[in-house]
Length: 423
Image (cartoon, rainbow, N blue to C red; front, side):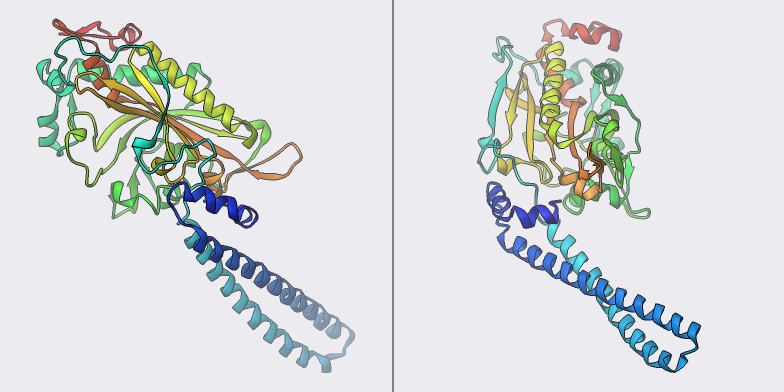
């Protein structure tokens, strides 16, 4: 959520920035600025009336003390009138604040200048591509056929138990899945991230804090009786650890990692892009989250990008990095880099990670601040990235490492999986 002071002081740049997203914010921002002024005027009026009421209360107390009680009655009437006005002003402030929130939550984050113009994923900018080949020299099978051939992923059984989008991993498929999770966690921990284990059900306040609510209710599974949501990513509970927090600069930076199952309804998704492990309702993911001082946030983003590159380099998977255009950015993101691996069995790129900085957008919602070196309270910057999404990495390994005798595992995974080959 954009800060009120930011909106007032940077009106033109915010309007122009949101135009990159194809979002016309001029009317909403004008309403916000007018309401912001009204709130300040109302608060000043309220403060003045409260001060006057306090003064009268002290005068009444003094009159009782000195025995001049004849003047008390008129002062009490005046004070009753003042208190009636203050209640009205307090109610007005509550309504103004409610309206300001309702308007501000309609505004997405402002893209950084480096974000390319564009309306769709076709306008994303490729900023890096590994030198591993994506050419198909043999008839590579897609991962869903390999999963069936070697009896390691059962989509029909998952459909029987739950429905489409809930695969069952079996034998070496399950061990590969577990090995990848442990490998990702170990890599993140060795890079300085502290592991946490968090709930996979969140309340509305947590969903609001990171921007999932009230924007993505339709994509989240909702437990109606308890009014809780199944998490779409570990980013949500991990970042909300610090909701309503005032940190000291000495506590920064904060770097956390965690594994969770993730749940997405993927309503309206259909076609070949959802086949197999391409798009699931339940999947495993390891996340990295950072909380940084504003001056260090972009360097932290670069570190996160380089860290994920190092993992994909060790896995020997062909990959590329895209800088997302304004029209393809998530609602809360100011800058996002997507990592895609090449699916040689499908002849297409599959997204396996998004690394984003949210500037102070989430921190404003979370009320996440710190005391800088001068003791001044300031909003922090939040960042997160997939490190990594497991199913599509599994798909990439199965397809890219297949040969006529089976599937060879990348060397780095052998100690984690406990086997060298799927046959």
